[in-house]
Image (cartoon, rainbow, N blue to C red; front, side, top):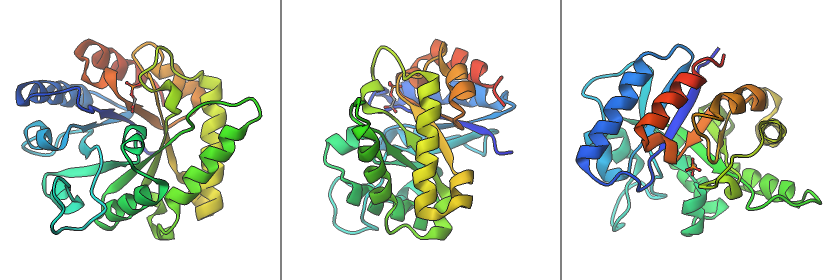
Length: 253
Ligand code: PGA
């Protein structure tokens, strides 16, 4: 059985080399004690190097918050997958809702994911509806998002994709989605994934939940929501919350 995975998305919530080193060190120390869980941290690009361990650390991996759609060349301000790889990154987010607000479309998310996968890295593709609608229209929105984002990704890469389901309304919110709803939505995500890549890939794909996951709700979300882990924003850079959350989720098989 593969381990559960907790991905810390630091966003711009860590702003200095000193703080990055502190949080990375704590994340590594906690990861080393985990039995059923692996930890990934996604610092801002410029803090990846100072946050990265000198040598391989147990249950711990480096991630990045996005990657360029380009392989290289004259693209001011962009960071490509090969640069990330050379920094020791093995997981890269694609299509986080904050990136979608900043201009990412399903097509560009698909391009990013293809670059990430072609470089031999794991693509963490973020999807989620903006709002829940009584008529269930949000399911159509989510289905279209997943289908279009996975379009053009070769079938053999399905195993290197993690889908992070993050209802946009629950990100940076007061409360997370209810665990039983998360369970329904994770099944839906798997179903759409299997429509694209086939039933076997749909059974195997790892689905994470994101949106106001914290020390109090994390274990229940994973147990009842039956997700393979969490994509965590604020709590991933809060020392006390991170410590309690990782301890809590490591009880989940
Ligand atoms: P949050 O962010 O945990 O602060 O709600 C989650 C995310 O954006 O991935």
